[in-house]
Length: 258
Length: 265
Image (cartoon, rainbow over all chains, first blue to last red; front, top):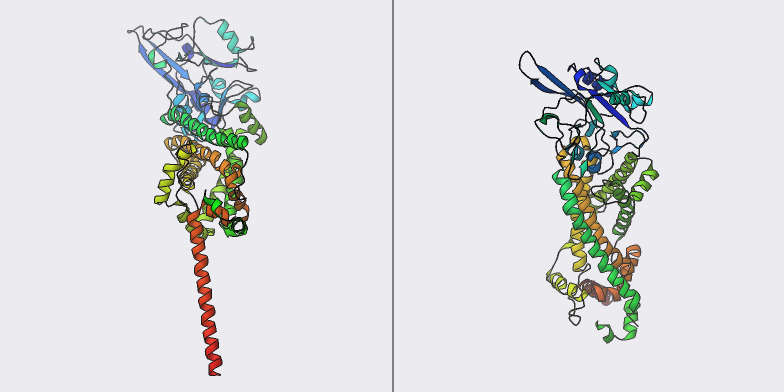
């Protein structure tokens, strides 16, 4: 990893009770508008027969992937992977809210704040990290289901939790040359066996799997049609003038009047 | 060309006689446009940093981001200059100098039969065919320049519409902003493709040297006008002759009045 820190979330699914205090903490900390959340908890539903019932809640937020497809499509570089922390952030001064990245994210971790016309997402509370605090969702988690820390530091909470974990799952998206390598490590995520994940690590249920990144028609058309066309047009125009310029240099300039 | 049939003193006389081709409004607007493009094009290219599109080299992106301090500042600079450009171009053409630009636009954009003929012959001549065939006489702007002007006007509108869409980002739905970006890109690079030809023809090509200096002085020689814009030259000649006739008539009328006055007196 070329980044100084390798921040990661470790989420112990067995400890989540769907209280959603992380959603509240995140919304308060980051002024998230009422109709959006940066975090969500997926209810996998009731499993098994009475009295042996189980129910699993999977908390989500941005995976801060090692190779995020969202930053690849951003035209202006308004969303980027921070060079120091390795977090995927949005510079909302530069963002125009076109939503190329919202479509590209395989986890649906981004949304467009239409009121401000920008894209918003989990920042792992960088402003809190800078003063040595944990992200709001982690600090507030009642059951200690959420952990956050630097994987490069072997003594951090996440490193310790991972080294003692029984099962670790990453919702990796690995297909068509895209390999996201997400940085949320789920502990004790039950393997329902409905779908074989492309990641050999584990099997996860369909609802928690990442989707394919969507590339918008405008972006695809731009990349596949407009750029080659413009390259041909500019190359052609350049060649025409270059031909005449070389001819002019070779033949020398003619005097027309005398 | 037929210039060998003209005796040398006549040629020299035509060389010294000047016709006004561009007025100050056009000249200033043209160079304002050049200055704006010189600032907008490099910064605009620097903004496009998506590795999927792969348009701009990394050193270019980095250089401009470092120059302006950040991504957002680079974008702010780009659209601030852009708005000044939109305002001045719009103001000059539709409000400030409209009495210069409206006749200019009409004269430089309408295609006639000779222009269509020119467009058939000229591309072939550039490929080295049909060298013997003379080009039809051209107006103040030749057919190539007229076609160029259509592209420039359309793409300029494209840029001026798609640019502000991306700046006033909270006013437009995402799909509009998604489409505005390739529209902005295509509009710019269609003009840039033509610019290679435009700059070469205007500033480097030896036969058109006078055209370059006329963009500062506003004047071209009668010799150049006759060789490249014969229709316009003939029009100028007709205007001159009509003016001479009128002056002659007025002088004669004045003489008549004088004669009558003396005979009466």
